[in-house]
Length: 60
Image (cartoon, rainbow, N blue to C red; front, side):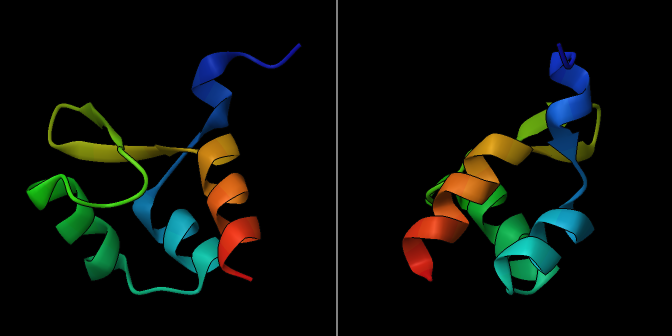
């Protein structure tokens, strides 16, 4: 079974999977208006891989 931490990916990885710019994901995080809410680790953003894949399936 995978640990929860291993399901978190960087903004760069999430952007690549979704086909959007990293800045788009950062704006979602700052304005809290995106379809996916990141987790914050200090000043770093981490995105749940399952949520990213679920959303990627909806937009394709």
